[in-house]
Length: 170
Ligand code: NI
Image 1: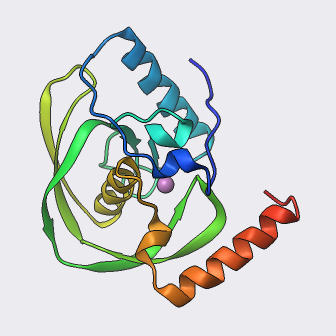
Image 2: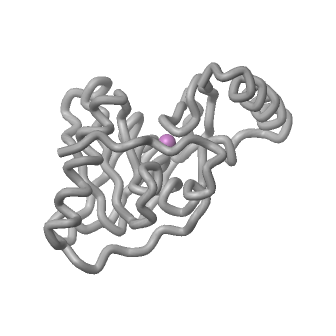
């Protein structure tokens, strides 16, 4: 296994459309294991493949630090098939260091996906699990949580982020 470099905003790979996985081969298994290791080392509660420079529809999620009953989930070609309710909660992203803000998302989701061996699966989650699933599936569509905040907050973020990057603090 290997730790992978996490791409940081505004790296363009974060905006690229990811491709569905068709081959569940040893290369995919290695990618998934490396992503899990990289997520835990960061540490983070989720990681999408394009965040480590691979534009494929693969993501890993583990919110067990906040929600003990929640397992490690490996999502291949995931799709949200049901959304319910609304929740405002603080969010951050490994690709956007030193910035957290409140993001509005569905409170409950149902996701259809393939597991790491290509078997169809579904998962339903609420609270932090629902948030992490939506955040990672957004990544696979080239979307970031800063795309889901208001214009004024976004402007404030962009100025601060540019300032921190130019001062070499990240
Ligand atoms: Ni993220």
